[in-house]
Amino acid sequence: MAAKIRRRDTVQVQTGKDRGRRGEVRQVLPGAQRVIVTGANMVKKHRRSRSATAPSEILEVEAPLHISNVALVCGGCDEPTRVGFRVLGDGRKVRYCKACDEAID
Image 1 (cartoon, one colour):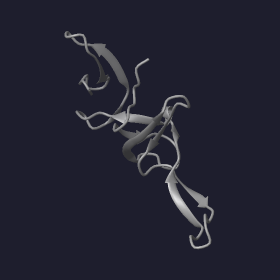
Image 2 (cartoon, helix red, strand yellow; image 1 turned 120 degrees about the vertical axis):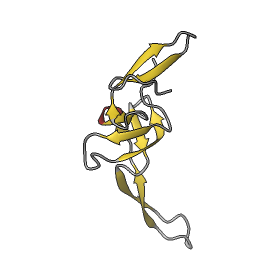
Image 3 (cartoon, helix red, strand yellow; image 1 turned 90 degrees about the vertical axis):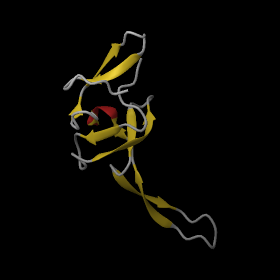
Image 4 (tube, one colour; image 1 turned 60 degrees about the horizontal axis):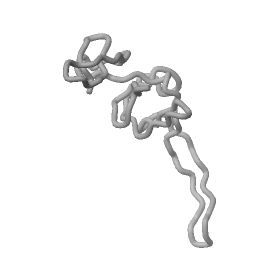
């Protein structure tokens, strides 16, 4: 099965506290159907001290979002869009924007 959203794609968050925010996909977790988007869904993570000299700290990290809560941003029309697949004449399978019908890959 081909992935509609891949690493380094620009996506827009559709739901939740970061609705409307755009970012680059840093990591795709296909087994859990989740993606990690740079700068979106930030959560605080408490980290214990590992030694007597290193202090404990509170980190802000990106948590995974469900893949259905993000939409791929088309490079041609600069809008969040649905993604389709088509096979070109030379046999390559590419993603395309269903709004403007432009190839994404």
